[in-house]
Length: 226
Image (cartoon, rainbow, N blue to C red; front, side, top):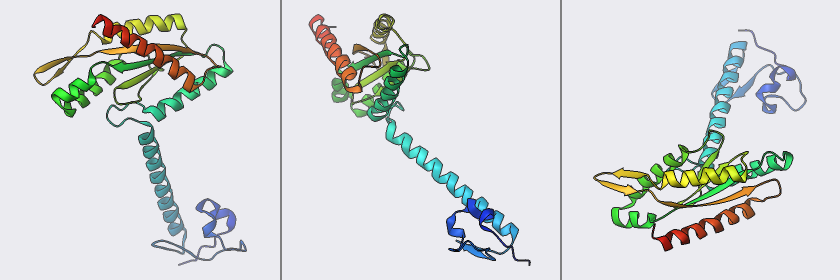
């Protein structure tokens, strides 16, 4: 069988490890499980190397997604949401029309669900909350679970006035929902807080502002007993 002569230019895509230190033509080289001495062998080795690289890249993407995603609900977690918020604030610094609304959502009475019916009920409840919130937003908005019973919604390119109307509609819709769990019906209840943002905001300041309004709303709900 004719030996294939490989020059540096011909094999540079296979990596520096395939070249000798003086960049001289190579008459044969080795890779794991391969003795390459013909063109078919070189093609096979290249194909295998490309498959390994694709597999590793896919695994990296999966790990990155896991690091940014809440496993229970499939929403972004706090880290993923913070990155999304940072991107939106960067966009708002470049474009005065790119501001938006951050809405914080805190469930009311969630601990009682866990205490009375167990963590399976609590997990199903959180998944139902995620579905309910996603059903109320646009495709370009972002919903995240940023804590145990705390969620956040990022409405992009929206004025504060419009955002306030959207939040009130969302609050009314969400708090009228019920969740069927086995033979029981569990009411879905939450408090909401809103903060508008523009290019001058930071993730910390906007989240603190929305949190303060959320807990003011929660206090009012407790006083009313609703």
